[in-house]
Amino acid sequence: MGVELRLTRAFARTHLGLVDLDTATRLGMRTAAWYRAIDSGAFELVHPGVARLAGAPVTREQLILAAAWACGPR
Image (cartoon, rainbow, N blue to C red; front, side, top):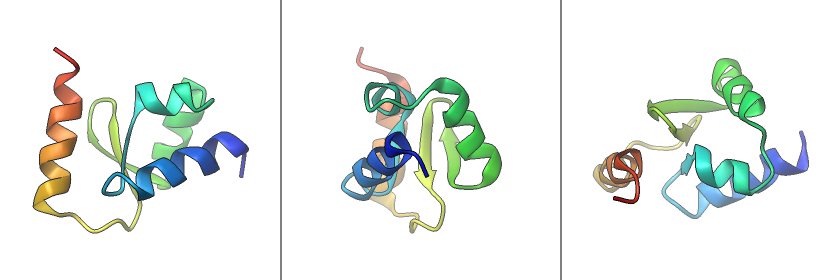
């Protein structure tokens, strides 16, 4: 497992099991690696650009945060 995937997983663990593509790329993950993580089942796509760690419990708070992140900063 690469450093960028470990950093991305660590971020998700402190954010209700979620990570967004923009944050993942800022942590060093390439876009292709993001899609490989989704294809391999390490991440589960919640919304375009927002994923949940595989096995992270689905909660109401998580779904709200995922929707907010999917809407973007504006």
